[in-house]
Amino acid sequence: MKTTDYIERSEKNILHTYNRYQIVLDRGEGVYLYDVDDKKYLDFAAGIAVNGLGYHHPIYTKALQEQAARLTHISNLYYNTPMMEAGEKVLKASGMAKVFFTNSGAEAIEGTLKAAKKYAFLRDGHAGHSIIAMEHSFHGRTVGALSVTGNTHYREPFEPLMGGVRFARFNDLDSVKAQIDDTVCAVIAETIQGEGGIYPADPDFLTGLRQLCDERDILLILDEIQCGMGRTGHYFAWQGYGVEPDIMTCAKALGGGVPVGAFVLGEKAAARSLEPGDHGTTYGGNPLACAAVSTVFDIYEQEHILEHVRDLTPYLEESLEGLMREHSCLTARRGKGFMQGLVVEGRPVGEIVTRALENGLLIISAGTDVLRLVPPLIIEKDHIDEMIGRLKASL
Image (cartoon, rainbow, N blue to C red; front, side, top):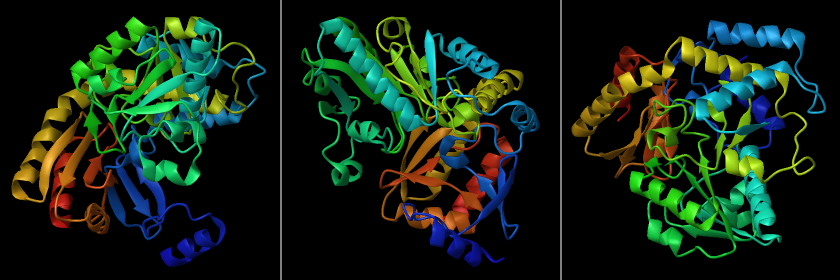
């Protein structure tokens, strides 16, 4: 069957909510993907920062096969051992108190918003609380997650959304302070804005948010869905700032490719927020997904993934800086670790992404003018060199 035949067959059945690139991917190995025509692609997109361990990692694959042969789903009416093991490893990595496993990042955001509202309900004895979110943020496509996403393009067709949300400017503490009053129960921000254009938080901004939330007894929520799980050389990006949230969300690379998310609560939020009956999920914490989570943490430890990211980041950054010096359309680099963005001026970003695809390189965009590079965390120097060569050809 030809690629065009596969695409036509898909378009007949799948709701067209994505303008997909005109390739049909078939399999992966390491940091490379292959389409149905056996064309090879160097992957610097990682399924939008999901496949941190690349493709077909032998330990990961074996663990999923073994768990699938034992048990995949039982519901949350019963305990299961993979969930216990995964929970212990999430808390060890984060130093936080409790975890709730979900099926996606957006669902983790939904649970987080409920936890924040319940915390304030118990604190004040009434409902009707508000949340401060950030302009240009992205937290997901469900109604609650969309309500705290600071981009009118995503929100407008689906309004009215969840009420009580105010937007402040990212990295502008005075803008946050101007929104604070007694109704606020939480401030939510990405530690590094991803979809909005790869903007890391300023250290003073995060420190100021932490102090402000402590003073007002409101919860600081940090969204680590894209920037977490080793992408910055720390398990979670906030650890590089030394600012611990009251609740964080994670997903994407958490399961190494299996759909799973989580929200993780510190002592304060865990002690006084969600109680039995307040929240639930049929599939969340299922044995298969949690076996994936547990194995991902094991591999990170065994193969020193965090150290590898930290060691290789300077080479990646220097290589991108060199590319900028050669191409005037690249005007800035932003990011941390293996989450990097190149600002493009005078050329459509989508055109460059398409050219790169033709040249066997998978990269994606962020915002309206940024090339986003979020490769598997197992890349080596030769992969960076190959990426630079293919991107040069595309530019």
